[in-house]
Length: 407
Image 1: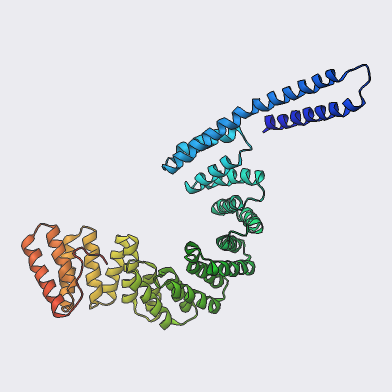
Image 2: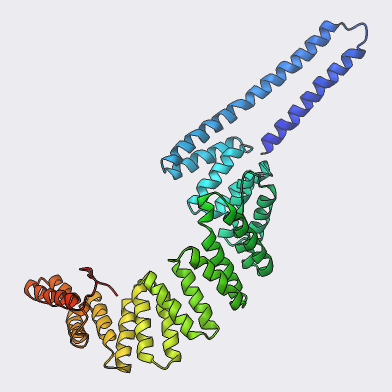
């Protein structure tokens, strides 16, 4: 950068010398002829041309690195692309496109500190570039520098060209404002972001609408405005019916308001959308605890931990469920499955047979037993339990089940 500054100073000095010579040529003494003046000016001009030419190889080489880096990035060779772009900006620190490309690749490589630095160089070179400010905001937000992120998002919005609708920038700004406690201002930007996204003709923009309602609802709920959060969660779900996170938080909001029946309805709905989603099971366990049904609470906690992959903890919860109620059939089945997944096959067989004896109309225990016997290469027993499962399923008009099982 120092070398570049010196070049600018030399350029300005030479330009002023030429201008001065041209001015003087109008007042030149009679003893000096025009040919001499022409020679002086020509000499200075040639020096200037040669000096400018001496600068061009650096930019030309930087541009070569830049073009090569873009080609590498398109081939998913980001590490090599970064190396070339770093060479480009080292050769020419004022090469805006190289800084922007370097920041973009850093950002998408999860190197957010380096991305923020690259975009910071870019915005110093092009102060009114919307995308550079937007990415600089995103990069700073990723590393928790929310004040810097807010400044760049605000600048991005202020310089955004008419051809772009920065709805997502509004919502990103809102999210950063939430982090520093500026709740009311954040809600204003969520609203303005929604207004833009809803009106957008871009399908990608409209796809962000449910998440924006969800984020705004979370902001209100976090600020204690539970009643105001409910319609925003509902809007998110209306647009995206399988939005399990929104359904879960809508249930939690009802729970925190004391509306246990509504909370249970929505947590069960979240499970219907994705039975492997752990959060709703934890919510249902809270309701069962309040209802003094500790065995059901433990069963739900077991399911929550099982879907998180914590099988040992799940096993303990299912055991506690049976301690609370030895006739609780679901716990036998779930305990049997957890034993199977922990490699405790004898215990698994014992509990699954108990579940089958109690759950006579369900094909699930028999199907699990068939799977376990097959896993142990006991083909005769596996076939026997498969026939039982198929017959039970047919007799009770239960939809077909998968060969493999989980909770």
